[in-house]
Length: 352
Image (cartoon, rainbow, N blue to C red; front, side, top):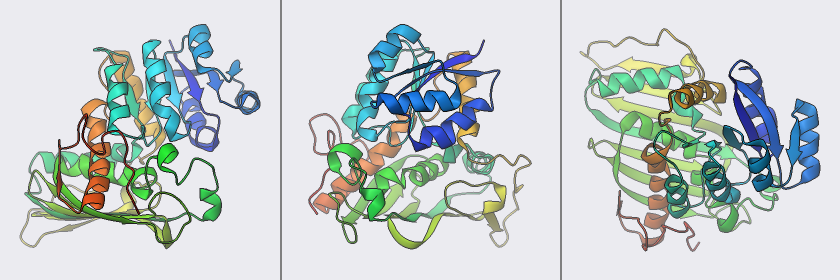
């Protein structure tokens, strides 16, 4: 039986990315509803994609349609409440990044999950490409020796018109600057490959846009392995690039792309005297929403927790929260330091 999906948010990302992915899996996915706060937008979206139900009321849709999976593609400030409502209605959730605006909101979503499902998973498609998965296994198995240093860069360009959208560039509605809204994908991929982070130092600034949040965020991260990483995020770069570099005892791996990659976007340089590892992987699957969706479907049918959910999804948001706290205080912030009742648990807002 196909999984019955309801789309929440009828904007560009749902129209250009999510729906095409769903339609490529007709045996597994049936989109049965779309909800948007603007009813006319929902009706238009439903007409284009031939979806039988369109409305502006999420609660009414959950009650009437009873979807199996709710696909959340709305503005970030709505994610937490919408995810909780869907989970309480018995539906699984697949939510666009950022998953919510704070660790407090994320923990509220996790509290609405149940063993065996429903679960809420984040759209972190960068970690699902075949090259990243192959490299992750090589690192975990020790085939490349100790990790030494990494560089994680999301240097993109977003003009004034981009920030003219009312919810963008505001702490209360976007939650943070480029680390939160743009670089979160590359940060998640960094953590996917190098594992748990231990501590972070950071700086943030608003340098080129008339917004509330920062438009540049930088950080130094130490991992539990001892490896060190530099992180750079900005929306002010004329030449846009997403870049990840890992230097390990066994060699250097570099990924250069913009919004997604395949095997050909990676390079591998073996260390002198080190035994070469198999590269690239035999499979060449790009880091697409479709790739992650296939895994999510398998997890749904098996009733098991999907990746990019629970603690596995939280650690990326926790690192970003720690970056903002470190930028505000000038102190080193350690993993686990931000919790209920502590600064930056309920909001990432800093003074700029």
